[in-house]
Length: 156
Image (cartoon, one colour):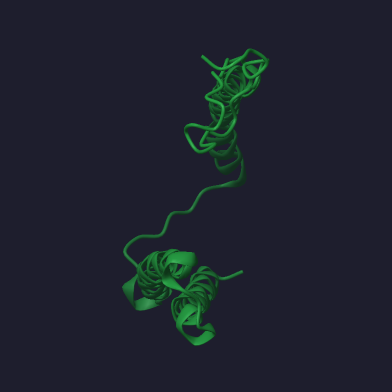
């Protein structure tokens, strides 16, 4: 596929996402949703989507213009000619170093995933004791805390 068409298609997709962001912004007032019950959150998400997709649209549109100017024969700066053996050697040299970089990046991603899973396991399944206040705090307890017979004892 031509680079210009690919960049223009990406720009059109960004424009569609831009319009969807405006729909998200306008949806809560049109539906009569209360701001404190998610309306303000949708408004914030919509603003973020609108701004980021508009910036991406401008970037892709500019890249498409640059790609179309690069393809113009009158703008050609240089042209190289290689025989097939030289070209195969260049391709082999270019592709030779990428394997170790990809493996290193994959190993780093696996390491971060393992560290994240260890912290998740410790946080999720680590045992924490919550003292029972017998309703004096109004039942407010942080989510994810484990109750271990804290309320089995009589009140203080």
